[in-house]
Length: 398
Image (cartoon, rainbow, N blue to C red; front, side):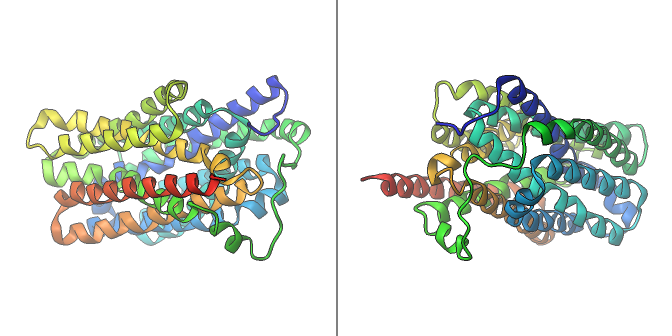
């Protein structure tokens, strides 16, 4: 059973706002990977330095995710969402105006902090109040933003414009979304006051208590491994094409957009598949499709590159939203907000460390090792998912 929900009209209106907020979350996530083959030369830094910026962004998101429960309790979902989108918009505007790597690293801090609290807050809200199909469609809208970002960047690069123009355009789009959220703020406050259907247990040892729940440790590892795959491919996929396959930077950016488009389409389709498959089945299905995509990219044929990128995106599509929607079912609704924050933090630890680590590894091995690197984590996530489901099922057995 889902938690008690607001009236139908308000529920649909709030869902629309959450969809818009997730577009804003997706827009900056894919920009750096698409723009980096054109950026690092202008910045005068080695190619692997993209991992440093990515790591700082993700570290900020980890911090804000861990404290999301307290922040949301103090200020409410609406205020946190609006302020977080504003932070990302201003950080992206700074990206468009800066040509120094050090400044980009500093701007990456608010860019990451702006994502964490809103991400875990909205995911928990949808997991509690909406069906599984809405969670998939929610993350499909993240994919809309993530697919639009590289398209915008590719358009500017193809016309000979600077990468900063792409960042500037995305910043203005973000500011437009801030305005929409700001205008709706009185409605959020009036109709969705800061009350949770299930108040979380207040305990100084909350983390110790929650981490002992059956399967939670494995769940955190699953989120870590999945986001390692998604973020590493999203950040370094374009560089793989440029340095290993000989693509131009604008062509590589478009294929990166195809990867995120695959995630978007896949999550839209997954919303319908939830009527026929369980969340667990969709997670396993997605892992299998990723494997097929990596095999296609490994083959020495040009014509397998496009379907390979698309299939990796399609495979990623159902995994994250299906895992998130299972959170109240797996671990109970009472502490779902805190557990959601822990899961998001674990996910962003993967985003923080592993793309950076691969950049360092690729400095010695070349970017051709990308497929092997992802394959290792695909095997790990499959094994951890099996163990997680077994632990949860055995923990619920009377």
